[in-house]
Length: 496
Image (cartoon, rainbow, N blue to C red; front, side, top):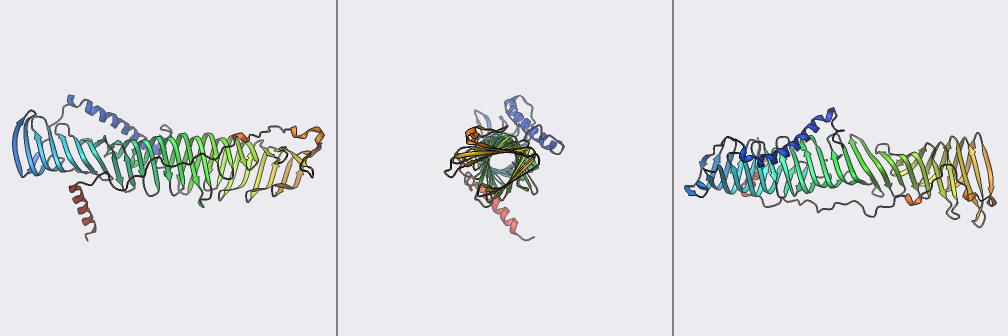
């Protein structure tokens, strides 16, 4: 799950083929489950024989529903596959079902079930449990106030609120289906999942738990506490390889380890991969990035947590203070979430407006590398085919002149944001442009300066929209379930 919490077709490669088959089987089972009840009366079933083992009281009656056998007091019954305990049982001999009431416990080969009432169809092996329903399976415990269960296929439908617990965490939803043998499930309405390291919520969830395959749709929210990451979108899919896809207005928010900076990523689609020590985040389509120290736009982005490299591709833009850097590809090298360097290619354009005159200092070339020290530009290297325009002010801070230089390579060193030294190499061409020639109107080829496109700080951060999952179950546990748990605890501490 967020552990890297996805295209259905793309996932059907050899190592994941079994997962895709099992997910397809999950949807087929959902369809079959509905059809099973629609056509129940038309099917031919073998009658399940119910044998009475014990009761304190037994009498027979004839009612509008036919002959009824009424059993009261510590009723114990069995079939070939079930062992049933209840306070009382009404066995309708002409209608092929029994009604059981009070402290119900059913034991099968794979699980235990407790409830307050039960209607069991001996012809179809389909049962409806109501009131404090608890299911103890080999890998999970389920709680609900109502459950429709097929003992043949071991499929459960929960038309009311359901809670599921296993060794990894807790799930809660308004309703759902659970398939015991493939260990698969589908949940609908206010779905929430939580464990010690992650939290998720959505409108719907489809899961193959045994394969760690999950699909979530509608108002998806994901949080990884260890990675300090929160995500939102309309759809999410994840698998056991550590891959997660998020799409439909996908957003990701990550706090750095020192908790001093937050990075916000928005895109049409976001992919997160966590494998061993490698963690990558990829954004696709209309990528927007905001951090305290910079902001960026591109068609695609890739971040490698191991190297600290953030690569923007496709009509990329980056803003750092007053600097706008544009190019087809921009590499942002981060160290401890601080920009260590920028590298843009091909044919990048760097523009910085003069804060007093508004004139645009401009640099272009085939590639451009910018180095930073404590958040300030310390060095800039442009090569080959470099060209620049620098505007100067007089002693009254008014525009005075500009210098335009072309060279094979330009190297500039900065001090407190100002050019401290300038070196240029080979094929040098330069000119002085007095104010009379209006140098403020000169634009180098490819000039771009669009501060209005700079991504703004998010108006609101990503937070869960629902209250936390309660620690306690949905209801007080039935008596026989409490006794079962007590026996389990005793057996766990008894010496061999």
